[in-house]
Structures are given as structure tokens and as C-alpha cells.
Amino acid sequence: MNNIAIDVKNLYVNFARYSALENLNLSIPGGNFVSVVGPNGAGKTTFLKVILGLLKPNQGTITIFGKHTDELSPFDLGYVPQIKTLDRSFPALPIELVSTGLKAKWPGKMIKTNKEPVMETLEKVGAGNLAKRPLNKLSGGELQRVYLARALIRKPKILVLDEPATGIDWIGENDIHKIIDDYKSEFNATIIMVTHDWEAAYHHADHVLMLNRQILCFDTPDNAFTEQCLRKTFGHVGHRHEMIFVGRHHD
Amino acid sequence: MIEAFMQSFMLRAMLAGIFVGFMSSYFGVFIVQRRMSFMGSGLAHAAFGGVALGILLNTEPLWIAIPFTIIASIGITLLKDKTNLGSDTSIGILFAISVALGIIFLSLKRSYTADAFAYLFGSILSVQTSDLIVTIILTLFTVLTFFFYWSRWAYSTFDRELAKTDRIPVTIDDYVLNILLAITIVVSVKLVGIILVAAFLVIPAASARLIAVTFFGMTIISICLGIVSSIIGLITSYIFDLPSGATIILVQAVIFFIAIIYQKASMSETI
Ligand SMILES: Nc1ncnc2c1ncn2[C@@H]1O[C@H](COP(=O)(O)OP(=O)(O)OP(=O)(O)O)[C@@H](O)[C@H]1O
Ligand SMILES: [Mg+2]
Image (tube, rainbow over all chains, first blue to last red):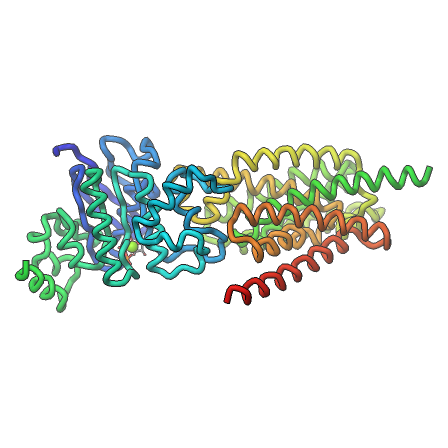
């Protein structure tokens, strides 16, 4: 497994005069599950947008399986955005949103051959019953599942997830992480997941990327969730750090 | 003789009404969902500047108004993209410049023309064969966009970033949409009038939004309502000798209120 999925070299991103990402260097092997953690405004979403080709770096390079982001097919990447910007006035059904994952375009009339895989994927994420409920009537957690189905249906080599389990109840959260883990092992997919849930990061990821404008630690969960790394990334550590340690002693 | 004449102008107006009703209600769904109704208003007033220049130059106003309005629409989009002004501010500025220019142009034309009035309020009598030809060509283009652009415009209306990750050229698509919108507004102005054209674009789509659950459904319903209200409005205005634009808008308004009642009724059913 020495194929590199994502290769980042000397990457800088600025918004006007504000520098959001500074001198990132890292290589993520194919089939790896990387959790990205860091405080609000650390540049996590910005980093994902660079991977997706939505933002161009001001300096440095990023390649995905050796290719420039512009050369990728949309089907190489599955994306679950950090949901807060959804336009609730837009008339749409979950089956339509999921079908954009399959076709990379907005559906006109839904035809049967598209409906079947769409329904199957919605069932898989536990949202089969929501298929035809208007998007603007879904709760935050229900919406997250629909977006996850949209990302999974294209069977991408890389899954880019921006807080996919935020707003999902505790049982649901375990479901979601199980679905992601299963997807990873079935397709040997690379997963990049931003999360504020350190426990999820600790238990599911192969590597943890601690980000706060710069990369402060990039290591296995055991080596990354140290007091030193957390202090560098978050400034102070608080009680959650101890919770992780408690979890670790259990294992 | 008179009967035949009446029929030929009425036929022109009716055909223009159907085509213009189709286009404006089709583009209207994007206007409504992208919250661009002020853009419709702004472009209509830009059209006023172009029409006034055409009148001043003693040419067919349409030929001046179309490029004039397209430039205004590109100007608005550029101002919005290249500065951090909101689109309402960019529209407001170009809106004012165009109207100011229009007033100056008309005042330079010493013999005041009744023509300008027809453009302000719309008139069935004013639809010429040349208007009809332009309208038909534009309608053909619009129908083509249904196959090549509708899904892309819909996608970027829903979520611009998601559309971008699927390699939809959203910025170029925006320009295409705004340019077609500009031309649609100019050709609608003769029938509906500058003052009412923004409402003409928005009301069928807003009514369709109340009824539809998918964007495709909304588009189809909006187009049907747009065409039907143009036909009913033109016939009513002909029979009762009323201004065409105002009559069409009132017919649209009646449909809108029926849609509200329909929505309320179907909501109370599901509860
Ligand atoms: N389009 C933009 N224009 C200007 N500044 C931006 C833009 N997008 C992000 N920023 C700034 O860049 C910084 C990083 O933002 P980003 O969204 O990547 O944070 P994040 O780590 O995802 O935070 P959160 O945990 O709150 O989601 C923030 O300070 C933000 O204000
Ligand atoms: Mg974020």
C-alpha cells in the first residue's frame, strides 16, 4: 500500500490578507482513514475544499493519485458538506439529491433505472423511509444521512466528509461510523473526515491530522491524542482529553 | 377589412404573448429560487435606457435595447463578482444609471413621443412582425437550454458548491442565464411594460413553487401558468379594451391566490 492518495506540498491558502492554511505538507496513503481535528476556524473545511478543487492554493501543490485536482473526474470524490447552508426553499426530494451523486447533474423526471440504486443507498444509510419527504421537512440528522447516501452512491475512491455525524443521535452516530468503516474496507477507499468528536476520531481513524492553520500533528491516534499535540492545536485541553484517556484504558 | 386587420395584430400579440409567457415563466423559476427578482426589475429599467436611446436615434428601439440590457446584465454580474458589493447594490447602481440615461435621451428628443408610453405600460398594438421574429428565435434558444442548461442551472441554484464539485462551470452558466434573461425582458416589455415586467417573471414561478415538490415540477407548472395567464390576459384585455400588461398581471395574481388556497388546503389535509 505505498500508493499515495493525496499528496500535499508547501500548500498555502489565503483569503485576501488572512492566511487560512500555512505550509501544509503531507502524504495520505490510499485506503487510509484520516480524521481531521482542530478548533473552529482552523481551516479544516478550507483544506477539504482544496482537496475537492473548490479552492485553488495560493502557493504549493496538491495531487490526488498523482493528478491535478482539475484532471479528476467528479466520480473520484464523494463529498458530504458541512450542512448549514442548505437553501430550504428549494423544492427537492431526497431521491433527487442522492441521484446527483449518481449522475453529477440535477434530475428532471426520475426514471426507474436511477431510482433503484438510489433507494438501495438510502436504505443503507437508514433513510429509506425519507425518500420522498421534501428536503425542507427533514431534520438536521436526517439530512446528513441523505448527503452521506449521495456521496456513497458514486462509489468514490476518496470520501471527503465534513462533520458527517454532527446532529445525528447516539445510536445513529454509531450506524454512520459503521457504514463509513464498511465502505472503506469494501472498496479500500481513502477517507478524510473532519470531526469535533475526538472519540470517533480515535476509534475509527488510522491517522489523525491536527490542524490549526498549520499541521501540528499527523500521526496514529495513539501518538496524536497526546497532551502535547492537543495543547499545540487547541491552546488548552480541558476535560475531554481525559475522557479519551479513559476510553483508551478500556481498550 | 377592419376585422382582418384586428385579427392580424391580435394574432401577432397572441403568439408573442404565448412565447413571452413561456420564456419568462421558465426563467422565472431561477429568478425566484435564486432570489433575483430585483435583477428582473433592474434589467427592465436598463431596457428603458436602451429603448429611450433607440427612440432618440430614430431606429427600432429593440435593436438598441437588447445590447444595452445585455451589457447592463454583464455589468451587474461583473460588479457583483469583482467587488464585495452585494448584488442588490450592483443592481441598484446600474438601475439608476440606466433610468437617468433614459430620461436624458428622451428629453433630448424634442418632439415627445407616445412610443415611450407604450414601453412603460405595454400595449398589444405595439407588437410588430420584427418583434415576433426576435421572440420566436429567442424561444427556440430557450427551448434548447431546456435540454442543455436546465439541469446545470437547477443544480447550481440548489447548491453552487456542490455543483462546482461536479465540474459544472457555474460562473459561465450564470452569464448565459443572465444574458438570456436580459433578452427575454426586452422582448416582454412591449407586451407587459417596463413597470410590470419583473412581476410578470416572478408570479407564475412563485405560484408554481407553492404547488410543486420538485424543481422539475415547479418548472413545468410555472411554464403552464405563464402561458395560460398570457392567453387569458390578452383575450380579456382585447374584449374589455384594457392595457394588456396590467391585465395579464392581474390574471397571474388570481392564479397565485388560487395556488395559496390550494397549498393551504393540501396542507390541512396531510395534518
Ligand atoms: N470564503 C472565505 N472568505 C474569507 N474567509 C474565509 C472564507 N472561508 C473561510 N474563511 C476563513 O478561514 C478560516 C478557516 O475557515 P474554515 O471554514 O476552514 O474553518 P473550519 O476549521 O472548518 O471551522 P469549523 O470547525 O467552524 O467548521 C476562518 O477564519 C474563516 O473565517
Ligand atoms: Mg468547517
